[in-house]
Amino acid sequence: MKGTELKYEDLEGLFKGLLDKKAVDCLILPHKVGNNVAYMMATDKDRIEPPVPAIFAPSFSVNAANIVKGWTIPEKIGIVAKPCEIRAAVELIKLRQMDKESVLLISVDCSGTYKNQDYADHYGEIGDWVDSAKIEELKGKGIAIREACEICDNRFADVGDIGIARVDGEKVLVAGITDMGIEALSALELSLEDKEIERQEEKEKIAADAKKKEEELPKASSVEELEEFLRDCIVCKNCRDMCPVCYCKECFFDQPLGNPVGGDLLNLAELRGAIAVPANQLMYHLTRVYHVSTTCVGCGACEDACPKDIPLTRFYPVIAKKVQEIFEYVPGKDVEEPLPFVTYEEEELEDKLR
Amino acid sequence: MEKRERGILLEAEKFKENKGVKKEKMGEEAKGEFEPKIIGFTCNWCTYAGADLAGTSRKKYPPNVRLIRLMCSGRLDPMFVLKVLLNGADAVFIGGCHPGECHYIKGNFYARRRIAAIRTILKQFGLDNRVRAEWCSASEGDKFARIMKEMAEDIKKLGPNPMRGKIL
Image (cartoon, rainbow over all chains, first blue to last red; front, side):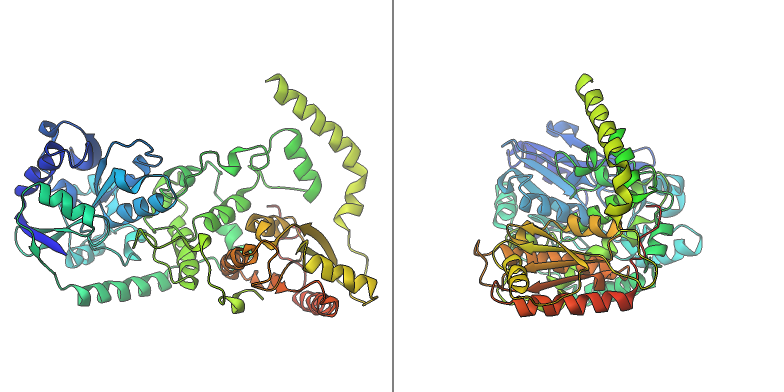
């Protein structure tokens, strides 16, 4: 990795520089709104506010990749976001929803986030950023990070084109990960050196903790339990709309076959004798989990979006991870690696078929 | 708007026509032993021809399977599997050409990945043993009959699909 160490206050100049030197035409980044943070899209460099503490704030509102879903114009967009959001954007590039050349992905270290409403409510206690010790301390007070973050094992800024990692003290390491990232940083006349931060040990510890927590989560393990788990679902499809990798222009469940009304609904009821209404609740969730099974980055936006507070993190990311394991695929890790469903090996998976 | 309304009228007509057919179509169980209903998706070039061979060479196999012919196992959208199970069938059989022998060169390679994925999902809810994929060529009438026998026995042991009879 080629990078340079910067002070927190230098980051403002970095982002302004990206716009000024036309490395990007616009920039999506978080900014402070009262006690919380929200994303903004800036084209004028003078509108960039000091990015710290907003970019490190442990608050999750919308997955930033969602904002640029279907960015089919050639103008270049820069996204400053958490690793899960950047990984979702990488998946969207692979799904051809964005052009690789028209996005500059900048990932920022994350140590776990709170639902944005929880963050605003408890801003006094949580503060501008958290580390693992503080997360534990707050958990004791009944303020817990999102379940999706608890089971997340990709919290470091090592994805996308540029990574912004926090190092000790008031410093960050800004590093170019891809050629495009290095090029963008060089254009800013930063002195780039070969820099590595050794975090392998920490990474392994996080992964082990995450795995343990994932195993501890209660999960539906039979049809009866699944029925109970989804009992309150009203098929509003918010989980689909907020999911960064659920990208179809026209969803099957918006079409007459997936969303039957009138005579279609009556026929369905006649076929089965009795059906639940709204119809296709279980079909919707099982289909969706298959559709996102290889690309789900486990950001937990589905759970946040659910108006009925169904803990969907125990469903989508958990099941998707099982599917990703059989293909040994980590979504968003490498933009060149093909999606599991568009490639194959001649000899594989025979034990998974029967 | 008008078009939509006309659509509903047509659907209502269809409903009237189908009303009496339902019992037969859904195969209300005969009294006594549980007879599983298996839906089989077979590819046109291998497994369907294999089933044909089993028939023409008078191999006996249980009548529990209803075959649906696809041009290729790669045509199988895993949503078909979900829909079959949700509508109450007891098992799904998927048949395709042996890997490397696909009529369309690589259709069954893609199918294999999709089936592995959907089975992994169904495994979480204990439904994966109701889905079975096999490679069966046009000359393997014996194999087809054998698989059907095995499947009918396996599913009989497993019992009816837990989704059957549920209001889903």
